[in-house]
Image (cartoon, rainbow, N blue to C red; front, side):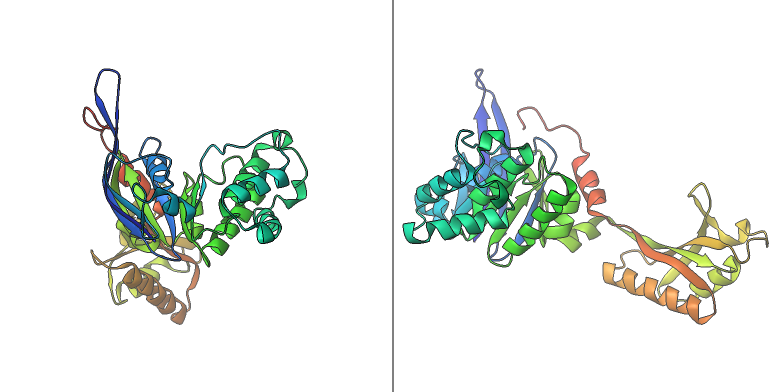
Length: 342
């Protein structure tokens, strides 16, 4: 549905100095995918999305939307996209339903089905209750919803959403997340956001940009696993020395340590004083380096089963590390771009 090859966008200052906003970026988005587009401010996300939507032209490279080149076949490419920019341009003097009918007409929605399409879009974007209010009187959150309705009113095969939850309250954010998941059943969705929880809740794939370059891409689980740890933490009720002995015998476990109050792992034998029996002990088990996410998860299951089989209680067990936030921080905490960069 979306194919980007060698996309580059440069701006030139009055002094003739080039500023690179997007630097040789390539990726593809398939039909029915929900893709999270991540990156810090200034990474080049919005510039890339504006090029996809036909609002900007590329300096170099090629972009095709549903088989149509955004430069040589711009009109057909734009017909395939519903685009919601970060700052939604609206007509404040118009009522919501009037504005959406106007937008549906511009997008060549057939007159016979225009009313139904507008009502459907307002319902899905949760703004039908303000259909007859002037846009200028709406809160920022409702204006975002109107922008969402605008993006989907023509039922485009591709929907691009740039910061769709900006200004929404927690309940509205949850509604938008559900809408994005629903859209993914019928549309290809590209979602740009600073809120990593939205990507983890909605996206099946992640694209991560930094300094205009695409630094990581792939299924959400694989991107999260880039920072996956080789340890797991367990909260065990019972004799910690016995628990450690049991855990060391579990297949795949290479070390066991106790995590003290200062959250520093220390050898179990050196910490236990014989008075901790019956209390909840936090133990950290280490797996072989290079173990996959699936192998670590299976190792945790085996640890829990072994402890329970010997009569020890397990209050909590989970692999440590490996969050999308960890990956984002690791890949975007780099030195500033070189002279002439974005």
